[in-house]
Amino acid sequence: MSTLRGNFTVWAARLNLTLLTSITAAIVVGIAFIYSASSIREADALRRLYLMHAQVGVVGIIIILAISMIDYRRILRLSWVFYAIGVVLLVATLIFAEPQMGARRWIGGIQPAEIAKMATVILLAHFLGNRSTPRDWRIYLLAIAITALPIILIVRQPDLGTALIFLPTLFAMLFVGRIAPRAVVATLLIASVALAVFIGVLIAAERENASPALQKHVRRVIPLNNYQRERLLVFLFPDRDPFGHGWNKRQSEIAVGSGGVWGKGYLKGDQNLLGYLPASVASNDFIFSVLAEETGFAGSLVILLLFAGIIVPTLAVAYMCTDGAGRLLCTGVATITFCHMVVNIGMTVGLLPVTGLPLPFISYGRTFLLTMAAAYGLVQSVAVHGRDKTPQFSGE
Image (cartoon, rainbow, N blue to C red; front, side, top):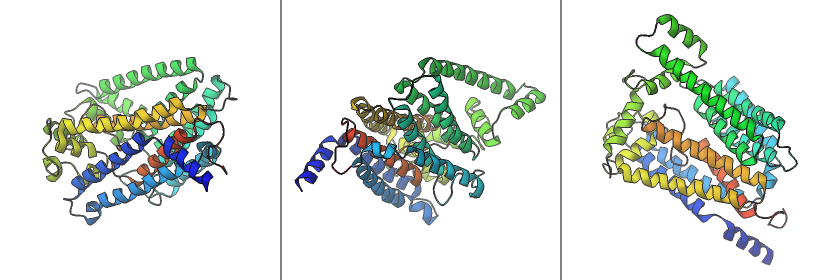
C-alpha cells in the first residue's frame, strides 16, 4: 500500500499541470463554440455536435491521465506494431471506404490518417532516439522512407493537407535528433526552391493573359486534383471564383474581420447565424472564424496564449527529458500541434490556402481529438518517467 501511495505521489508531483489545464481549457472552448456554430442548424445531428465533443473530450482527458501512468518506453517498444496498424488502416481505407465529398478518408467512423500520423511519430522517436543508431545519411534516408509510405497513402485518399503535416514533423525530429544535419539542410533548401518554382509556374499559367495551351500543359503536369488546384488558385488570386471555391475563404475573412477588438458577443456572430459560414465547416475547419467573430481580437489572442500553454510546456518536457526517444516524441507532438494551429488559423484569416486541418482540441473531430489526447498522454508520460533511467513505478 505504501508503495502504491508513493508511486501516486511521484506521478502527481511530476504531471505537468500547466499542460493538462491548457488542454482541458481548449476542450471547454471547443464545446462552447461548437455549440455556437451548430445550435442554429436544422439537422438534429448538427445541433448535438457540442455534446459529442464534450463526451469525447472527457474520454480524451481520461486517456491522457491513463497513458501518463505507463512508462512511455514500454509503448515505444511496440512502435512498429502501431505503425503497421496505421498503414494497414490506410490501405483498407483506399480499398473499402465509401467516397465522401470526393475523398476516401473515413472507415468505420474513424479517420486512419490521424492514427497513422501519430504512429509514425512514435516509430520515428523510437528509431531515431536509439543511441546505438548511427547519425549518418543512411538513417536519414530510412527515416524518409518510413514517413513517405503513409504520406503516399494519404495523398491517394486524397488528403494533401494532412499529408503535408508529416514533413515539418519529420524534419523537426531529425533536427533535434541531430541526424545527418547537412543532408537535412540541403533537402530543406531544395524543397524551398522547388516550392517557389511550383508556385511561380502555377501563377504564370493561371493569369488572365496566359495561353490555353500553357494552362493545359501545366494542369496535366502538376499532380493536383481539381479542387486542390482551385483552393490554391483562390489563395493566389483572391478575386477568383468568390461564389464557388472561394466562398468559405471569403466568408471566413469577413467573419474574422467583423469581430473587431472585442467581438460581437457569444452566439451573436452574423456570418454563422445567417448561414454564410456553411454548417459543414463552421464547427470543424472554420471554428476559429466563429470564435474570432464573437470574441474579436481579444478572444483570438487568448486562444493563441492557450496554445502557447500547450506547446511551450511540451517543449519544456522535451528539454528536461534525459532520454533521446522521449525528447523526440515530445518534439514530434509539439510540431504537429504547432502546424495544425498555424495552418488552421492562417487559412481562416486568408494567409494560407484552405485545407481540411482542424484546430487541436477545439475543432469537432472524434478521431483527431482522441489521437491528440493519446499523443499528450505520451507527453505526460515523458514528464513523469523521462528523467528516470528505469521505470519509476514498480511492476513495470
